[in-house]
Length: 173
Ligand code: ADP
Image 1 (cartoon, rainbow, N blue to C red):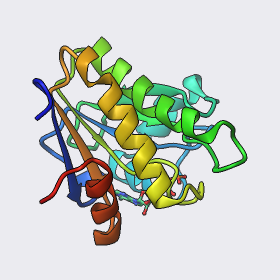
Image 2: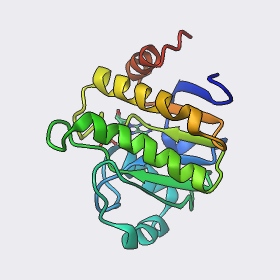
Image 3: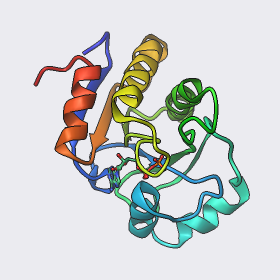
Image 4: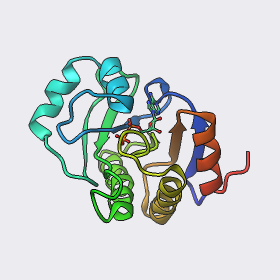
């Protein structure tokens, strides 16, 4: 707990977080289905998701947009375009912007819980330890501005990812 906001890191699948108001998609600029998180989210949400996203595309690195959850158990999906490491620069600021903009959108519709995957650490090549540090700093820096979001969950796909993010967030369990 930091103030009234709980931040946790768990191992799991971002499409299986039924207790959260919103989950974040590690999207592509066109907001289409793809590999990794985007593929899993679009498969679980169904074809309506691509249709709903089309008018909002393309988005730029660091930006976030929001859609309904459709077939996902969550009310909303927040789509963030992470930076391609060392191509979209400054990569650290663009990655931090993803988390800030996603939380700003969640606040704007008064959501109380949001789950994030490890944005940019898959196809976009961000080194895990560096991404974890940037992410932890970005989230810690906005916590005091949140008035609706009370739970932030980092959902890490592998046990190794979980250990790295726990260390960066200084969570010792
Ligand atoms: P990016 O293009 O932003 O790098 P990816 O989807 O390729 O996004 O990967 C981001 C991270 O999400 C990687 O660490 C990957 O292992 C992880 N990941 C892939 N599928 C899932 C899933 N279903 N749930 C949670 N994390 C996932």
